[in-house]
Image (cartoon, rainbow over all chains, first blue to last red):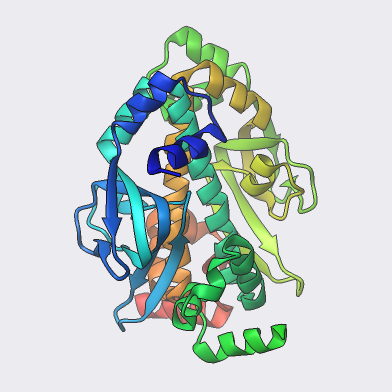
Amino acid sequence: MIAKDILKAHLSQIITLTEAEFDYCFSHFKLLSFQKGQTLITAGDHVESEYFVVSGCLKSFYINEDMKMFILQFAMKNWWTADYAALYNETPATISVDCVLDAEVLSITNREREKLCKEIHAIEHFFRWRTNKGYVATQKRLLSMMNNNVRARYEELIKQYPDLHQLLPKTLIAAYLGVSRETLSRLYNDEK
Amino acid sequence: MIAKDILKAHLSQIITLTEAEFDYCFSHFKLLSFQKGQTLITAGDHVESEYFVVSGCLKSFYINEDMKMFILQFAMKNWWTADYAALYNETPATISVDCVLDAEVLSITNREREKLCKEIHAIEHFFRWRTNKGYVATQKRLLSMMNNNVRARYEELIKQYPDLHQLLPKTLIAAYLGVSRETLSRLYNDEK
């Protein structure tokens, strides 16, 4: 499946566009290829674009003063990623995005997305739906973090990333769950 | 200022509606009054509506298996609140909403909001903007929770709720920050 078809199938889960409308939308995206380890956004950057993942896997992460990494999201096929605070508020990035695996993405700038949303009502609907989903998922994760429910976060990870969690280095999984490697090993052992 | 004018001023920060359009939108809202301590949503409820706060203060919160309370949000004038996961996914509420102070709200059902979004492009734009804001705020809070940066969360609370944080019982502030009363006292003392 080529990038264009993947985006088309993704949009058509929520909205209906004519061929001409979709072609017009698609003309605002750029296809980019990255290798494992390459960086799309570095903290401090001016952020102009967001990314729709066509293949591979990205991660968005935050590094604190002690150089400890926290993973906000793994983004695989059909996921969107960026530093949204930076993108929407036009502030420097505090979140970085890089490739966990070789990846192909479709990028669109904030300006072009806003233009499309204004021009095509259905596109505005799509992006509202998408942010609603991101919002409730993040709220859920915040609550499980406040509740310190590591087991719930681990189960959520397996549910959200059924294929991925077995491919990922344990260090990254621990950084996503916000736990030490030791706590993670205990979770793995409990499962057996 | 009456409820209608408060909602109008709030919408007009982001979108432009004609008088007729705004009146039409407004006809989909219901004005409700609650007293301090009254409940709008209880965990387990079927959730049909979201609430725009006209006056007073609500809180949305989660209670875990050990009956410990975590506060997701305080909602004051011009804030929106609900259990959005329950509202969007049509699942039973896991989050409760009640009144910290006497409150007046404008309620709108999920179905009516979706109808308005479909009928009036500008309304869809407004709700996308609003969710974008909620999404980045929740992401920021998630990161500061993962990073265990209590000081940053406390400063964010003062910034977000400049008037409120002095009115609130310390127990509620602790439940918002996800810390013990003792840790909170230390933050207060550091400030002096």
